[in-house]
Image (cartoon, rainbow, N blue to C red; front, side, top):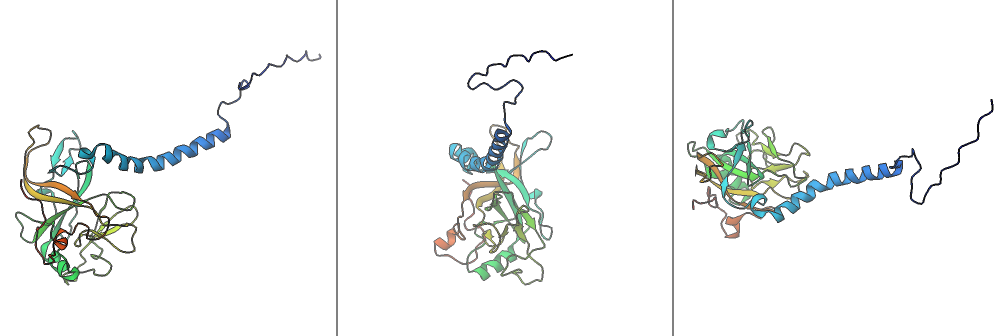
Length: 264
């Protein structure tokens, strides 16, 4: 049996896709996929720069208030207090939040701050606040955003304080070092959070000027607390000692908390 005549060909209008042909060519698919990947890599970094500009009070670290943690079940805001901190040798920092910024709270030995001040020739303890119940310790707060790619930093107690000086007080025990777990960015906790030479960060961590005190929220959005870690302002550092306020005033001697926040 011979096949019947072929059906007449359908006229294709300009810009019309033939029936059955994908509206998205392979080339278009690859191109759009690459665009999405690039946007996914760039957008978070861009937003981290844009959002503080459009909402400075919420995101740029302005305005006093407590460093907080979130209740894992209710997401309620709870002030970080002295009781949340652990001393050396564990010295695990407390990762909190301050004005929508990651804030890292450290409990450090005052004797090491004294030794680092003598070694560096500056007052490395000017933002350290004395612990209210343990005279051997002080408390420091740094912005927890690494200056390399913005990851949240942590701590490694096995490292020495820095590459040039590992043991400030000469007790044979490494002082530990602020560490970014993502790309191994490192900072000297006892030296105004200076970025350790040879590691990725181009600048020191920013410093959160703070004090310890009682807190109550008149709006009731944050729980009340005593001995709370209260941030006052952020001091940005584009280079080592940008936040050395004592040094800018011609003062280099050790003075614990000389530039710490004061109660209003």
